[in-house]
Amino acid sequence: MSNLKDKVAIVTGGSRGIGRAIVLMLAQNGCHVAFSYQKSEKAALDLVAEAKKLGVKCMASKVDVRDFVKVKAWVEEAREKMGHLDILVNNAGIIMDKALMLMEPRDWQDVIDTNLTGVFNVTRACIVGFLKQKSGDVINISSVSGVFGLPRQVNYSASKGGVNAFTKALAKEVAAYGIRVNAIAPGFIDTDILSGLADEQKDKILAVVPLGRLGTSQEVAGCVRFLLSENARYITGQIIQVDGGLAIR
Ligand code: NDP
Image (cartoon, rainbow, N blue to C red; front, side, top):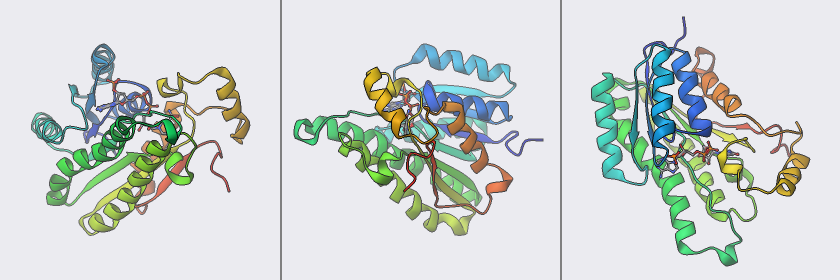
């Protein structure tokens, strides 16, 4: 039987892409899921129906991860409706790529608020319950951009570098309470976030990926599955790259 059976997970940004694949992976393993979205209501409701068909409880809530007060209310509602919380996957994220000389304060702030402050907001809302129950798993979806930096992404690289440091600091802080905190740093994954790229840019990306292709959302969800498995019980504070070898140095 899956070790995730009848556990409960909170996932941010579950409506599309990597988050959607994570919600489905959890549901396939018998884990009940409460996920958030921002704009994609139809996709979110379709996903709830698909997850429920797999025999688990699933709820979708329109919650902006930037809003501390609304996030807190959402986490409390999820805990009440689902009975308990065991897993948090901080997945919601955005890009606003441009050269620093053209970057407006808004481009900087939106990316930091969503990708970094969002992780603080949701983790802050979940952590007290995890500490009380002396168990919990936090997985942050970071990026290789936060590991080695990418041009035209100083806002994004800074936000994900922050997530990586957050992951390590919190892992040390809560390890004594049986809580593990890890991050996954995907490389280039085939989701809507890359849809703005021209074919020429995609070709340039593929040229530097040793495995020679984009990754899939399911491959990132597979790493989440591993981190939540019994095989990963001694792993905490790690930033695991799922990137086709992109970050090999
Ligand atoms: P998508 O753009 O496909 O999906 C983003 C998800 O985040 C959507 O569900 C979206 O909701 C949600 N979201 C965005 N902003 C907010 C917000 N303020 N509050 C709540 N939810 C929000 O992205 P990916 O699936 O590609 O990315 C998922 C994560 O993986 C991100 O953290 C990203 O940085 C990271 N990543 C992705 C890579 C890639 O190549 N794809 C590479 C490295 C990291 P809605 O649908 O309602 O808009």
